[in-house]
Amino acid sequence: MLGAMIKLYGFPQTRTNRVQWALEELGVAYEYVRVEVPRWRQSLSLVAMYVPTWLFIGSATWAVARSLTPDAPFARVAFAAVLSWVAGFLAVPVPAGAGIREAVLLGASGLDGGVAVATALVARLIFIAVDALGALVGSPAATRRRGGVRAGPLPDAVERAHREAEPPA
Image 1 (cartoon, rainbow, N blue to C red):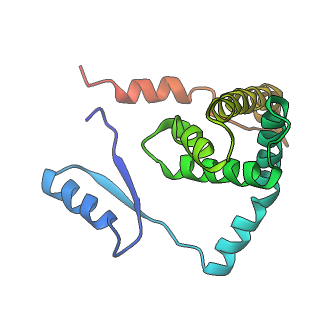
Image 2 (cartoon, rainbow, N blue to C red):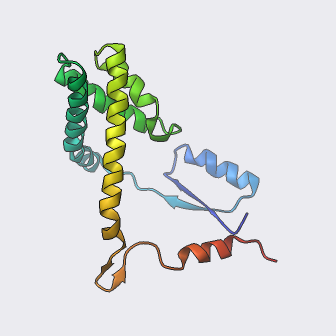
């Protein structure tokens, strides 16, 4: 198995037990990592921290819709944008909620079909551009030295991982 071991993250008495059972039946080596579920108060505070982001996402999507049609309702488009992001996040097998976010925005925004599709696509392109710009601006900070310690992967980590993954000769 190329020297790698599966890490199974889970919480007792959940569906993780099914995966754990399957791994044991197959004789696959794994490491079980217990995930602590936060308490309700902590979960709600984490969700509350996302509210400003959701406001920006909703406002940006509304601005795109407004540039395409003057009668785009702010509250409905902003709510549809946030709902589409949540639905895309929950659609785990779909990368970046591709298609899911657009379909939810189309159905929930109250915009005409062509305007809703154009809004969804243009907003996605804008968000991708913003993410790329953030990565470009943030990458020097992620690799600079802090207090004598270099942040990021160790210099020889990639080569060492390749060596360890090679089957013995």
